[in-house]
Image 1 (cartoon, rainbow, N blue to C red):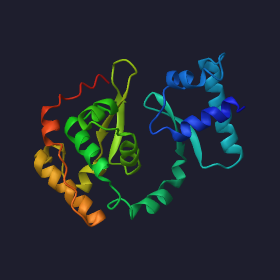
Image 2: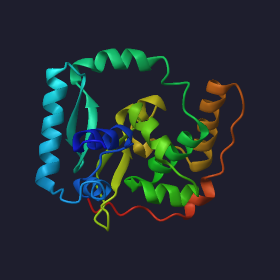
Image 3: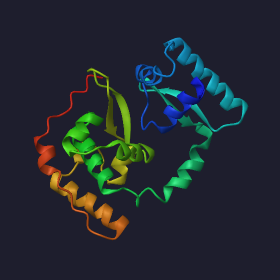
Length: 207
């Protein structure tokens, strides 16, 4: 049987986005029926102390109303160099679709993105966050308080835009994203989102 600290670490390790206290408690309750918020926060502190004592390069940090495992800031330049070469060549068609949806409907939640796509968005969101093309801007005021996503300044720079007002028409963006994929994969990757995006309602942030 694993300990509370091991279970908490495992959940945060695989989570694609910050995890709320309520969600952690719900996931851990079957194995730890007496767990309360104070005990969970104490376990988080114990893990961070262990990470510091053993020279680990990450900590559990609060973000957007939840918790997330994040590398320490001093490793930022190293990670940036490591990912730099990969930034322009690793966007899958799914990630490109998700990015387009966020660009035109931001701020928007993961369930709303998946409703437009008709497919999951977890891995695409994780990749876009890693590349700093999107960011978490808050939570929507509805049941579950899902995270809200929006594009970043890096997104604007990547596509040569001065501001979101310069976003191309949907068909033009699809062509641009297809060119990005062709550059990466050496093939054509048409997308078919314009109709869905045009008809989808804008997200009400409620942040």
